[in-house]
Image (tube, rainbow, N blue to C red; front, side, top):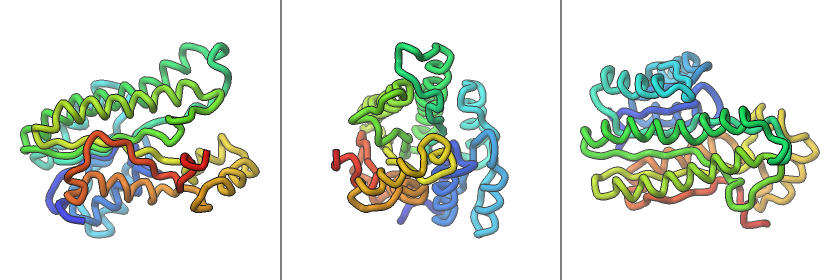
Length: 250
């Protein structure tokens, strides 16, 4: 893929999983990567540097508006510009229960992490990209949005909000050379998935997935990086599913 050499990219949630895979991929393509997370960031930076890339770590809690603002500001101070952003940080809903039994604190915490942070990231990233003459943003949504799943209403609502926010923001800045899309992962094989879905249920998910395997972090990262790249230069306002086809199997 072209267009990443000497450009600057922010990746949130880059301390592990999808975010780390995307940060490594961007570093390998020549981008200067700003690794943002509350933990795991230094390890991601070290991996990028060992491979010959350029990166720095900015510890960031995306629930804190000031930390998001500081992340974007440091990226520009350190590297002089901002071209790309993969707004990937998010949390699952581990407190699984019907909506009418859900406490407000759970609702607010997930909304702050999964949706408000996307708004705040774009709010601060877009002006910097305009200064650089344009750019591209990818937001992490979820493959659960079209169908919904019982007992995770807050998670589904937050990710549906990400898709909607992505579409509106894309329309607002398209004429100013900024593209914005979302990537919607399926059930990604990570330790977090093991904590919320039993192995037997995971096996059933694989059996109903047309490509017959769980989605990997690299699968999603590769799509996110593609959407940032020049090869996706005519793609904006889209929600792209990376789920092995499980959504079309319903």
